[in-house]
Image 1 (tube, rainbow, N blue to C red):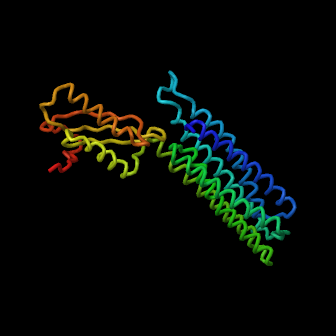
Image 2: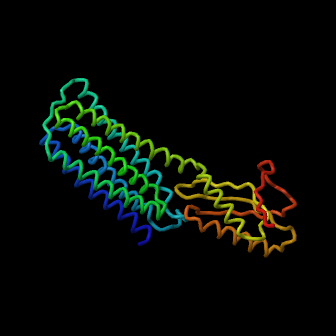
Image 3: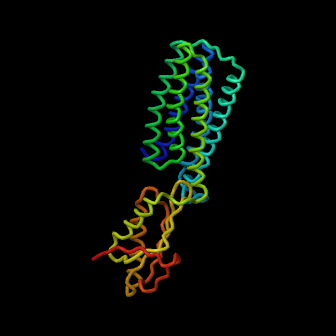
Amino acid sequence: MDRRGAVRRVGAVVLAVNLVLAAAKGAVWWTTGSYAVGSEAVNSAADALYSVVVLAGLYVTTQPPDFGHPHGHERIEPFVSLFVAVGVFGAGGTILYRSATTLVAGDYTVVVGPWAVGVLAASAVVKYGLYRYCLRVADEYNSPATTATALDNRNDILTAAAALSGVLGSTAGYPLLDPLAGSVVAVGILYTGYDIARDNVGYLVGAAPPPELREEILRRTFTHPQVRGAHDIVAHYVGPEVDVSLHIEVEGDLTLREAHDLESAVAATIRTIPEVDDVFVHVDPQEVGESEDGGQTEYLDRE
């Protein structure tokens, strides 16, 4: 399946699952009054709401390149992910406020039973399956929005476990654990929102990718025997993709055609890195030394 179909399918699957979970948790909440289950119901309802936006956003981001967007629409994905983060923050804040006011009021007597336990346990299992599915697609197609969705589903596993602990505690005669578990759910949700926002702000402000990517760029550059050195290596995010520019140093007696062919070959080699989009290579005679970073040129020992 191509990237467009795979990413869009993620949005549709996540939306359908979240709608089912929200309905199931809401029904159990209505019959038991469990604050932990209620928190999870709100969480799933919020997940379903932002899944609609994510599905629409993924539809836009997977449109083919056009005249106005010659590089495609993938760079819109961090904005979709930030919307997810805002929704997550809103859900977490609401749940935390509700749990805190319940604890202050001291009115946390609820009736729970096997349905509450069952819906939370089933939610954890389903969310684990969604997490693995979304993560696989995100890794394969380098999709920030799908990564954000995977992280939210991973966090939902932990919040469902926390809510389950509260329900079991209430069943065992410790009803205070129920709103306390709701608070734990809220903190987990808020942390997920922070996690998503942090990563995608980096995409939007042109942050540098991990050091391992720079090392891979150098490794692939030096697979070409005519490259004697490299300097002024700059890699930064443009949306979820990475743009790279660097200077390579070669013997000064290369012909113009040879230098051009080498530049094209180096750029093509670097561009095979999945995260990389555009590559700009400048060819310098080795003896000139134009480095703008104080002469910190990378060399490969070819002896």
